[in-house]
Every structure is written in C-alpha cells, then in structure tokens.
Amino acid sequence: MKIIKFEEKYRDDMIYMVLSAKNALGRVPRLNEDLLDIKANYFDKGHPFWIAIDEFDRVIGCIGTKQDEEGNLFLSHLYVKYDFKRHGIGGELLKIAEDSAKERGYKEVHVHMGKEYLESHIFYPKHGYKEYMDLYLKKEI
Image (cartoon, rainbow, N blue to C red; front, side):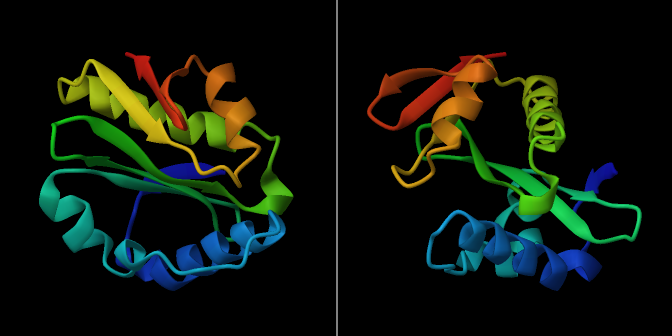
C-alpha cells in the first residue's frame, strides 16, 4: 500500500471505493459532488487530496482537507475500503493530512461527524480529537 496525491486517472475507482465504503456501513450510497472534480474542489483552492492504493493500483482509501468560511481546516472524505479496515490505512491517511496542515501553517484540524458514522466516533478520539460542539471535533497539531 502507498499513499499518493490524487491523480485524475483514479477518479472513477475512488468514487466506486467511497460508495462501496458507505454501502458497507449500511448507508444508502450517495455521491458527494465535490469528488467528481478534485482539481476544482481541492487543488485549485490550495487544498490537497490523497488516495491510498494497493499493490494492484486500486484505490483503497482517501482523504482531503477543506477550509471553511472562518478559516478553519476540516478533514474531508476519510474513507477506507471495507476489506482494508483495521490495517492502519485510515491512521496513515489522517497523519498525512495533519502533517500537511501543519506545514501549511494551521494550528488545528477539525472534523464534522455524521451520527450514522459510528466508527468515526471511536476513530477520531483515538487519534487525539476532542469534541467541542455536538458532532464536531478538533485536534491541535
């Protein structure tokens, strides 16, 4: 497994992975429109997006960052393919996003969790995130 910056040739495979990950969580898969154009929605706005790929060059995870109107940096779309969960891939993707945020001068990283993502309520606190508002967590980096 390796983590690389998103490349357009992986777009469809990444979208399929995200939809499959949502389905495995028992959610009705819904396409997030911003994933259709990573360049416009992330890179052109100065925010990176990474994917994890396996030895067969298939997407098995992803994460991005976005800035809100107040200048807070939020994690976006941290997903790991169901068959690859609990292998440290989510933690590695998270570390790359946090390290990048720190290099870009951010002092903290935020995440908004949906109620339906029960795994997130365990994952983020395990990695040092603390709740500051209902369903919002942050970590000083």
